[in-house]
Amino acid sequence: MDEKTIKENLDLMRDVLISHVPFAKAIGMEILDAKEGEAWMRVPYDEKLIGNPDTGVIHGGVITSALDNISGVAVQLSLPERMAIATLDLRIDYMKPATPKLDLTTHAHCYKVTRNIAFVRGTAYHDDIGDPIATSVGAFMLAANRSMSPGDAAEAGLIKKAEG
Amino acid sequence: MEILKQAREAGTKVDLNALIDAIPYAKFIGMEVDQKGTEITTVLRFDHKIIGNPVLPALHGGVIGSFLETTAILQLAYETGGEVLPKPIDLTIDYLRSGKPQDTFARARITKHGRRVANVHVEAWQDEHTKAIAAAHGHFLLKPPEET
Image 1 (cartoon, chains in turn cyan, yellow):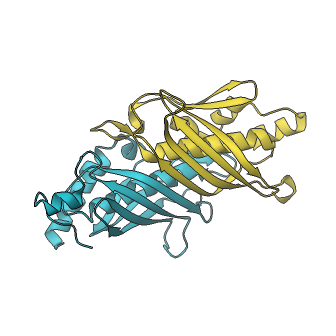
Image 2 (image 1 turned 30 degrees about the vertical axis):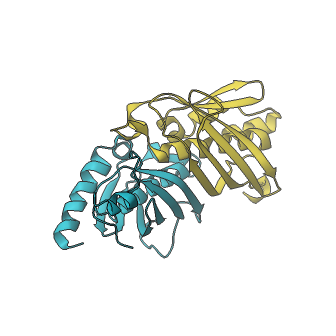
């Protein structure tokens, strides 16, 4: 993927996967950076996201939402063309509570795409990705709205074949 | 949490609707509790803001995950009677059907209740109870009061 494609993708991610997604807008998700198969996103701290009123720590669900969303973005950035994708499963491991008043940063890497499925790892943190708040692994179904799998479509010459 | 502490001291079960009202994020996504005796069903009221795919349209997977996680936490808070909210350790969500733009319901079952950790299974559905749109299982840390 060249620079121009990545720039276009970044704009597309902001547009299609954030601005037009009501819930992403509702919690203030903001794409920070993107490259092939990888993306970074921020969720600003907000009182409405609090899960524990005693401590002001944001709800685990906010982290789930951010990791689910950024994982989907990473999948889109690893595909040769836009297609509908659907989360099959997502596992979140919570390593430590988020620190109140600090923004949440998430990173996701789509490390494998097969004919039908994309595999993604994600991390949620504040400043240091080496000190994670939570990590995730997820599987996404590709071309969720199609009867033909992307692998079969590529073989039939309908779309460009996805690399590794 | 004050509300959990009060219920514990009074030897009563916590009022789950009051507990939800005290959790800003649960209120923000539009959660309510429908309780019949000791049977707890949580409700996620549909609202435009919880949409994740505006084309289908479908609910955001993260909101469904949040809803399942909170349902598990409420069930644990109700059954264990602890003074603090249980903390998620891990959660695995299976997305089975797309969430239609309508109200969603969920119920949680405690699979194993240990001294420090509980394993919980949760299912969410819309029209038919037997057709789950998502299921999750996870571990939660239950802190005994002396440790908090």
